[in-house]
Amino acid sequence: MEKIEGSSVIAERTGDTCVVVIGAEHGNEPAGVKAIARLHDLIGSGDWQVNSSILGLIGNPRALEKGVRFIDENLNRAFGRSTPGTYEDARAKEIARWLTDVKARFAQAYVIDLHSVSVGETRIAIVMDAERALFASAVSPIPFKLIAPGDIIPGTLLGFAESIGMIGLVVECGNHSSPQGETVAMEHIERLLGHVGALSSKTSSFLDRITFEGDVRTYELTEAIRPSEGFAWSIPVSSELSLKTGQEYARDPMGPRTAPYDCYIIMPSKIPEPTDYDAGFLATRA
Ligand SMILES: [Zn+2]
Image (cartoon, rainbow, N blue to C red; front, side, top):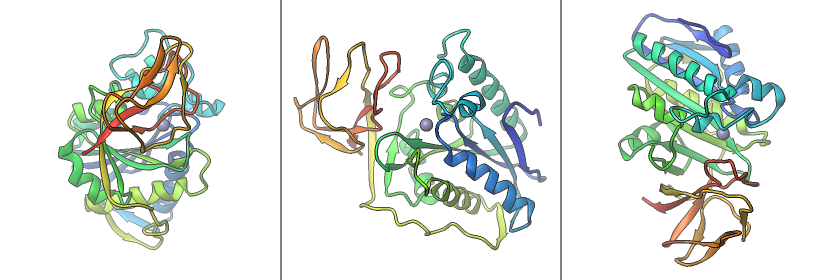
């Protein structure tokens, strides 16, 4: 297996199934990094015994080093649409090659991409399309499920992984600073390994340590909120904030931004930058 910066072999087994655990695709999101380290400990010590290969990847090691979201541009919008010459342009291409290599070796390849949010303690299980809804339900105890089509949120690692035949899930593990982020991440990894039949025995378990609030609900992203110079939220935003048709939610020098239909705000950035692809998304209940 080719090694790239930030990649690690957590378990190497014969067989055609592999699970790839990704942390810090954004450098200021520690849950996945801690989970990868924990996974090395659990499997290295024999606490967890696995019969499939497991790989770890620190998505954006430079940004992680600096404790920032990214160096030049958002890595999770850079797959296939990066700006030439940026660090993330090179990194997205490197990760794409690496994942392609992984998929070439394993008929069944799964990706779990662990993130966190800047506003609130939102936890979300995200898949690309409705076909993955059952997979999301099997692996994630989070009641808030999100379908995030590639044309609404382009350039993601998830979209790339799915495009080469991998089965992917993104988890928003709560706030960047949440002390429970690692536990949320570990519960998902444990459930994913269980789902694919990879976990043959375990002493420690992370299942059901956290109570996830709210009813089971699924949203589908309908459009990106594209920021511009001078863009600012008009109201205190958070995920699942409901908007009525015509309601103002943001403003820029061109005027108010209003809801085109009854919808919800999903994954808003606390302080959107004009250069960001999105300041968040609009979604409807699926
Ligand atoms: Zn993230």
